[in-house]
Amino acid sequence: MRLGEAEVYVCPACKQRMQVRIVQQRGEEVLEGLLACPCGAEFPIADGIPDLVFPRQLATSDLEAKLWYDANADVYDENLHLTFDTFREDEQRVRSRLVDRLELLPTQRVLELGAGSGRDSVLIADRLGTEGRLYLQDLSLAILRHSFPKMATQQVPTEFHVGNACHLPFSDGVFDAVFHFGGLNTFSDIGAFFSEVNRVTKVGGKVVAGDESMPVWLRNSEFGRVLMNSNPLYRYELPLQHLPVSCREVKLEWIIGGVFYVIEYRVGEGEPFADLDFEIPGIRGGTHRTRYHGLLEGVTEEAKSMAQAACARSGKSLHRWLDEAVRQAAARDLEGR
Ligand SMILES: C[S@@+](CC[C@H](N)C(=O)[O-])C[C@H]1O[C@@H](n2cnc3c(N)ncnc32)[C@H](O)[C@@H]1O
Image (tube, rainbow, N blue to C red; front, side):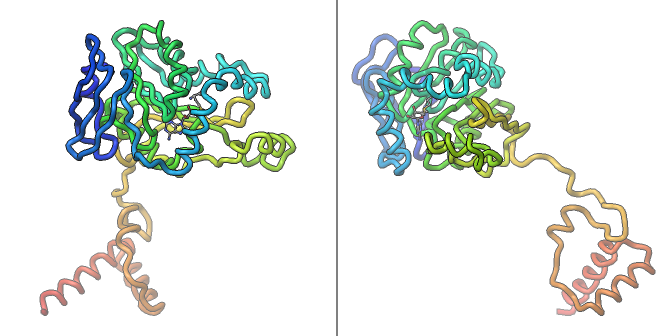
């Protein structure tokens, strides 16, 4: 970890700035030490890699994923071609297109979560220059280590850390783009993952995330059944319900034989815009907002018919007539108190 990067990291638990305590340093690089948070949490730095995993006691699915990738880190790169071979897809081409979706500029600051052995990381790095920054994270240090030699010849300054994609150790709005591919389905809290991703991405920044999911229309086909039998990860459903309200220009596509989804979007601010306050023409009247927020208790059918008849005679919309009638009655009763 470069010394200056202590500015970028925050405590993944409480999001406060942390103090770096150095035990061993080589130039700008902190080799051994720890990041200490005012909340009391401490995160070790060993061999230059901060361990920012939170919570320390991982949820079951995160722990299982970590243990699996720890155990299989050394054969991951050897075996991965099987997935692409199944669908006669060219891995480099597929990954390149995925990374293209980030629409990167060479000077941008990019975060890749669950980066694994760095197969996409090198393609992201190819699109960044010396003025850019790349942050690579994974829950398993064992697999992340396999990305070190791949990244060694890249010109973009790269920071590695061990962490949990559901609890990010970064301040708000520090990244131009965030990328993840391949681990999302088993993240213990997918809602927290997307919410954290949107928090650390600048407004207008790009997010690309994807994983396995057999499309619903193929689940009962032989294609679907055979593949889901070989790889139960295809059984996972799309995580669209977990997208935060700040997602804009959302695109969804199935790739790699049509059994992996990719969700791509830009981060906006809060909910999207809609004019909810213009007067809707017609007998009913009112606005989108008054129709939603202005509902009162129901009245008798007789009272409703009388109100409709009186309203028709007044030439006002039902909304305006009712609003005035309720105001008048309320003012009278409030004054009479
Ligand atoms: C299928 S691999 C994909 C690796 C790489 N992105 C790729 O496409 O080759 C899934 C990765 O997600 C990581 N992972 C799983 N759960 C995680 C979590 N909660 N936070 C961060 N990484 C996680 C695993 O350790 C593993 O490296």
